[in-house]
Length: 182
Ligand SMILES: [Zn+2]
Image (cartoon, rainbow, N blue to C red):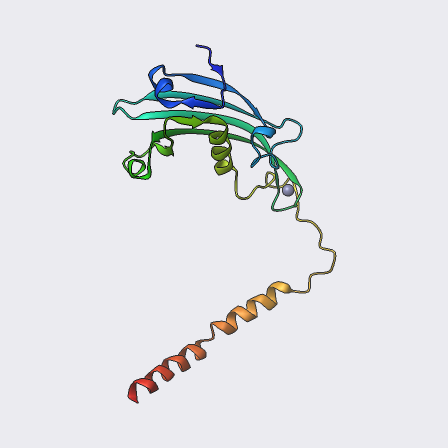
């Protein structure tokens, strides 16, 4: 079955009745919150959305997306290209109260009458962006620091130890004992 091109706004009731299926590509101009992350060589998101009603009569939208993003490797600080694939099943509910009633496996999408597919794509993909990214193990190394390492780590360790000095804890306990006696 071929899918209709991806529209911007969709009427939920009609889409659910027809089990409508849409698919298409969105460019970075439609996804301002992701424009900075999309691979400049191919700044698009492929998206397909299928509406329906499950056996419990709950309206849902099944959303699948694929995009190429560029993030900063947390080891070498160079760009790392990642392929992002998301697949989510969203329960269409009009308010927070009904969102709480959704069974596990359906994430709430709060929408009344209409759903904005472009906005939905941007939000879902932003959630799917990895918090940290790395090149595969062994393929890169941390950048060489300009100044020689002045044992920053050791300094930090010793300050941590000072704050957890057992004697300071003990004296705090003794102090509180004193105040009780008064
Ligand atoms: Zn790297």
